[in-house]
Length: 314
Image 1 (cartoon, rainbow, N blue to C red):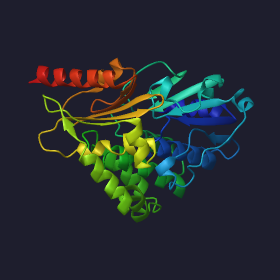
Image 2 (tube, rainbow, N blue to C red):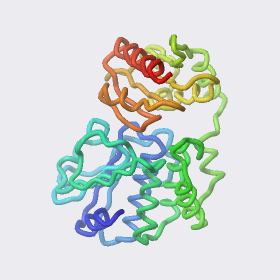
Image 3 (cartoon, rainbow, N blue to C red):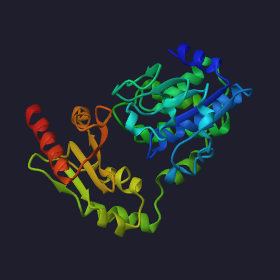
């Protein structure tokens, strides 16, 4: 599966790793994991990981991005991880590299790379990178193993989502067998809330509304976002889960206004909502997708399309 990837990596002395903007655990985990794998197994190569800050995932060791000059891209291989859309790639300089390799688990969206390894059957990009390490016989470091495990845990919903399968546990076991995984540290940083975070989550539960067809949604204006004191990612990606376990709710959406548009996080336990995201310039998975919308009017249009999807599926 990974012959073309390892072939490209062996050709280049300088490798620069990118991932999507507003990174989640899978983006950070796969980027850190890949960087650590390459540094450990190809010590003669220069390896860098770039992008916007890790945010709430800064606890993952090795997650501080490298700052490099433009000329480093001359003659370099760029590896793009965990995204299938150009607009979502953090740091547009990836396009100036001599060669681009993309490794991902999202549904294909658009042509980005010279070499594509896209495996939508995987629960996470970290799962793809772990399989890459296993198949190619690459040695794991403690930092790589913990980063990759973090991404597998978060993108599988703690091994609960439909994308979780026997291979997921085989690869998680492969990481556990290293003896490096500190589950207490990872879960404490991933899922423990302090009092202020718990209060913030409770305030968002009170904002939940439903459409006529039962789609649950939260809409947060820029003023409301500012009043929370929380960062955009905590509100947009972090609060979508407040609707995940509501009885009778098969689709839920979190809208967050920003200066550049309305961030839209779509989730479903039953329906393929990806075409709706793609129609609005986004992408992702069948049951977990996202997009950036123009305004509230487009957000309401998305809700109408989701209601139509529900109605047509009855």
